[in-house]
Length: 314
Image 1 (tube, helix red, strand yellow):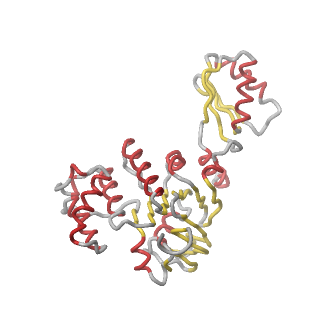
Image 2 (cartoon, rainbow, N blue to C red):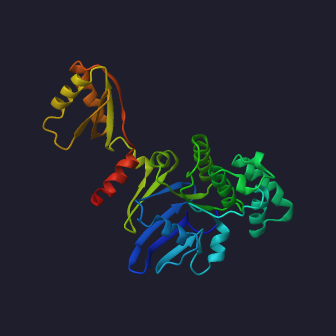
Image 3 (spheres, rainbow, N blue to C red):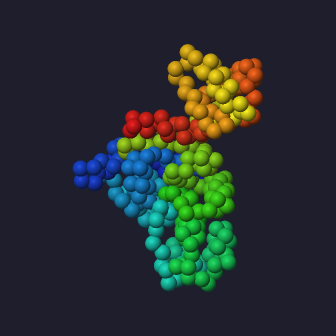
């Protein structure tokens, strides 16, 4: 494993100001090898500023950054050799073909001449753009350009991968393929940091989540910890008799002011509840003769953690 320790990224005490605005206020983050780490926060929380600093494209005012064991502030070139970077939006050389585009970056990273063609072909196959070989970049759709950007980030086989909204513009099938690709890269030992607003997909991809708010790290959790049996989420209940369901819920939740029930077409939403509490509620409803046809979580544990973090902004 390149570098030192078990982390592809280690950043401590990162601060960054833009005039009077403090974008980062002493933020800490660790991205282990062999795992996908989700970076979650509201707009303006400092996620993109942090990613630009980790990508060595922006200098922090204070703090330390190590990428694959390299001091990214003192030796940025060595850090860049170890990382792949895919921004939310990126420029492309429209007059190049897709294979010329990747060949350009393979050359920039110093891949041997006899390896470039094989690497470009393999990457285009990996992101399902092999049928676009010889076609100009400007003819690609937004989603196809996004997939080309992923291939570009992987040209030099980086051990650290930084992704800012990588699923933007992708169709459902491409999102599933992206999820599988990131899990495969993590299985191969790559340290992956991905920022996205699509929380449901992050929960399927990520091993860990780092919550960021107002430029600070406010939570660092294993995804299994968030999604454990003790976590509380809202639940959707469907019934053949919504009125009877509403009456039974009113009785079951009487004296429990911290729980909320909301009527929905054909049922209701209630919570937050743990899995055990939801099972107990279901038993009470069935005992009361309510014809329940479905009970399922209305949201994810990651969504609940995010909403709790941003509650003060309301």
